[in-house]
Every structure is written in structure tokens, then in C-alpha cells.
Image (cartoon, helix red, strand yellow):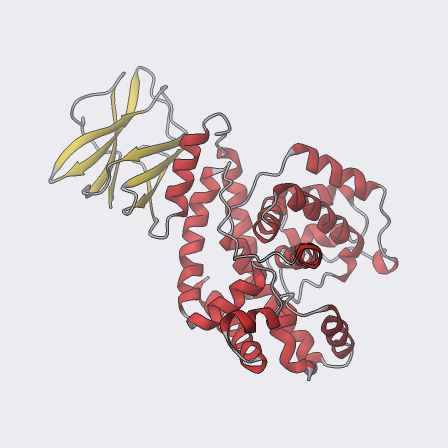
Length: 230
Length: 185
Ligand SMILES: [Zn+2]
């Protein structure tokens, strides 16, 4: 009877009585134990990818760390440490490690937008759009450019990372329509890490980035450091 | 210094947590708290309650870390399992009090870290492809249960299905999702 409830149990979609019955069943049925473990792994990876990570407030971290400092671990706990194995987990578990590693890489380029709620909302809308497409390319001379385009919103979010600083110059973004490059914005400062929101991307065929005299130019100065087909 | 580096895999950190290592716990928190809070927020649709559930889930992870078995899965999924169950318990308790109808939660809209979200766009694309491999009913059944916090009986009523049918839709859907996620990555 409980065999059939594995999925509902893994989804936390059973009532308390069924939950207890299933837990009793699991004491004797290794097939169901394995199946539920696999389902939970699947659901965890799925859920982790479905949500945008939320930055937890500092007080929450403090509260959690204070509480565990005063909380004893359950009796079976004190045992020898696991052998230090790295990336030894098969399949989906390894994928989770990769996802976390990617997140870790990006922690260095967190962008704070608390004071710019509207712009942040606009950016969030692009990133959450069902038709959002990610394009990514290295820039000539160093650095990385990601462009997320939402055709339905006719907007794009550009993230720039590790572009070399360019004293006396400005980085400028371009959108190419009908073979014609129009300015999509001049970046402030001489080095550019950060996030840009650009409008009217709908008919654009290419996204480009150049280095221009300070303040920007009316037309791009070769070479294009990045040319991304949209 | 001590056992694991700052970029140690969460599985390794959780192994250290099981020995009472509070620093490993802090690192683990930093790696996964953003996703734990996001999942709790999406199920509960209330930030304050989601923060409470996040705190409870991490305390439970601390207490029961010895039960984590890396051969069975990732640390992230293990912690999200704890989180989801606690979040759903709250939804049920709240419903018992008010009997309020809940629609499926809309995707969370709190982003502070755009760069992370850009990566998430790519992940979501893969996940969406996997969700497309599910039939409409399988997808709805899983979504209503997982994000809506509904029991399978409630899901059956909402989708006009019998109980055996909803159980098998959930099971078949999860198995397909598992296969697709394993292939896609
Ligand atoms: Zn069984």
C-alpha cells in the first residue's frame, strides 16, 4: 500500500497519518527508501534551479549561528569525520556541486540594487521572463560579457565582469540594427564591472562593446571587443 | 588552519558539521542559505515566516547532520528536503486555522544578486526543458504539491483525478524529471 505513496511522500503531500505509515514502511522496504531518496534529490535540484536565491539578511545568519552554538547534536552524531573526498558523488550530486561552484564564482560580483528598486524590478522582470535567453562571450582583451535578452519585453540585461580598466577611455555598448550600430549606453568610470539594463532590443541583431574616448562616441571605434548575435 | 577550505563542497562541509564543527556550519550556511530562504519564501509566500523556517531548517540540519549520507544525494537537496517539509507543515497549520485557498505561488521576485540570477536563467532553461518532458497533468500535480503545499488528495480534487491516478502522475512525473535532469547536466 505504502509503495504507491513514494512520490506523494517525497513531495510532502501526504497527511500526518500517511507520513507515519510510510516511515514505518521504510524501516522494512529498501526499494522505497532508495526511490524516495532519488525523488528528493531530483526535487531538491529542481527546486534550487526554479528559484532565485534570496540574499538572507545578516541578522538571520547571526541568529542561526547563535542557536546552533547552544544546540546539542543528536546522539549518533559524534563520530569520525567523513574521509575527505571531493566531487566523488555521482550524477545529480555532482551537478549540485557544479551549480554551487558557479554561484561561488559569482559572489565576487554581487550587485547591490537596494536603492534602485524600480530598475531592480525591471532587471528582475527580464531575468524572470519566460522567453529570456542567455548569451555569453569573452571580451577581447579580457573580461566576460553576459547578455540576457527578453524579446517579449524588448529589453536586455548585460553583466560585465573583469573588463580591464581603461584610463581616459569609456566602455560603450552598441546595438546593431540593419547593419547600423547605435549607442546602447556609455558605462561610467574607466573600468566596468556591473549590470546594465538596455531597452529597445527588439530588432537588434547584435550586441557590441567598444572602448571609446571618455564620454563615448556617436559611432563605434573598431575593434568590437564583443560581438554577440542576438 | 582547519579542515576544509572556503570553497569546499557542501557535502564535505556537512560531514564536518556532523562532528560538531561550527565553522564548517557557517560556511555551509553561506553556500546554501540563499536557496533555502528562496524555497521557503516561495512555498510560504511570506518573508518573515520564511526566515523563521530557514532558521528552523538550519538548526535541524545541525542537529541531524550525522544522518546525511553523501552516497544518497547532495547536501543542497538534503537541506532543501528539511526546509520544504517545515514550510509545508506551516502551510498546513495555517490552513487548519483559516481554510484559506492557496493558488500556486508565483516565482519569487526578490533579487539582489543579478549575476547569480543570470546563471539561474540558464539553469531555468534546462529545468524548463525537463518540465516540458512531463505531461501537463504530471507537471501540475507536482507543482501544486511542491510549491502549493497541497496534499495529493487536494491535488486530486483540483485536477479532477482519482487518488490512484494522481499518485501515479506524481510518481511518473518525478521519474521523468529525474531522468531528464540527469541527462541535461
Ligand atoms: Zn516499499
